[in-house]
Length: 388
Image 1 (tube, rainbow, N blue to C red):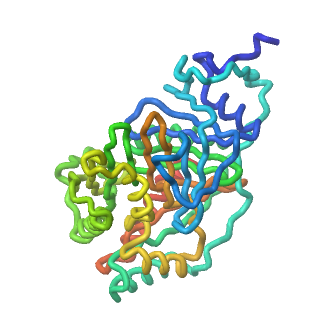
Image 2: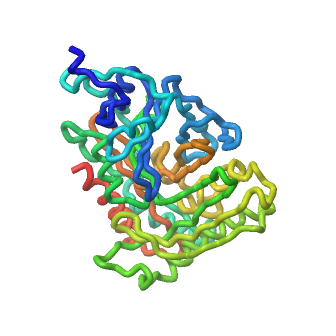
C-alpha cells in the first residue's frame, strides 16, 4: 500500500495533487504566477476567510487578498497557513521548510477535487449592451463624466472534465507579462484570470509602484511595438488614468515620484498604453503609503471612470448586474516583505455548469459605440477560446 503513496516533499508531486488534497479537506486555495516569473506560488488557507473593511499592507499577516469592485464592501483576506512554490508544475524540493510530511493518495485512489463552484447568479436587467454603451457615451458628452467603463459578461457551458489548473496554465503561456491567478474558496467561489494591470506594489526595500493602463487595440502579427500608432481618443483615455494617479499623489502631498511612459505593451492578443509611477517611501518618509494609495486608487478610472462618484453611480444604476470581484483587486500581501495587488481583469468566474467571462471598455465623449462593443467582444473571445 505504501508504494501507492507519495509525500508533498517529493520532487514529482504535481500542483493538482496538493490542490485536490487540501480542497477535499475543506481548505481555500490561491494559486498565482507573477509577471515574467518562472515560479508559481500556491497558498493554502485552512482557517477560513476573514472579511475586512480595509487592507493594511503594513500590519497584515502574510496572505492573499481578494476585493470586490464596490469599495464600500468588505475585502476578503486569506491567511497563508501553508505556502508552496512550484516550477514546471512540480513542487520545488526544500522550497519551504514549514511544509509538513503529508501523504497523498495515488491518483487512482484520490477523490475528485471539490472546487467551490457557485450554482447561479442574477442575469443583467438591461435590454442590450449596446444601449448601455450609447448611454455611457451620452453621459460623457453631457459632461457628467470624463470617462466611464461599462462592462458585460458572457456565459458559456462548462465542458466535461473542466480543469481550472489547465486553464490557469494556458493563461500563463498566453500572458507571460500578466499576473495569472486561480482562487477558490467557499466565500468567493472560483475565479481565474490574467491581469495586465498592477494596482499597488510595495517591495521589501520600501519602493512603491503603480501603473496607468488604458487604450486597447488588436495586436497584428510581427508588430513593432515602437511603431504602433494610437488614436487621439486612446491617448486621451490613457492620460485620464495617469491624471487620476497624479491627483492621488497630490491628495497625500507626494511630489517626489518618477514617471515612465506611456509606452505600448502586449497583453495576450491585445496592445495597451502603459505608464509606470514609482515612489521611494523612505525618501518621502511615508511608510503607510501603500495602504493609503490602495484606498485612494481603487477602483481606478481604468475600470470605473472619472470622476469616480458619478461614474460609479451611473454603473450601479445602469449596468444591471453585480460585478462582484470582477474589476476588484487581488494578490499576495507581505510575502517575503512584498505586497503585489492587481486589478482583477481578463477574468472568468466558474459556476456549477457555466463559465462567466467578463470584459469592459473605456468610453469617452469621442467614443464610437461599435468600436467599443467590438473591443469588449475581442476581450471576451480571448477568454472563451480557452474554455472551448
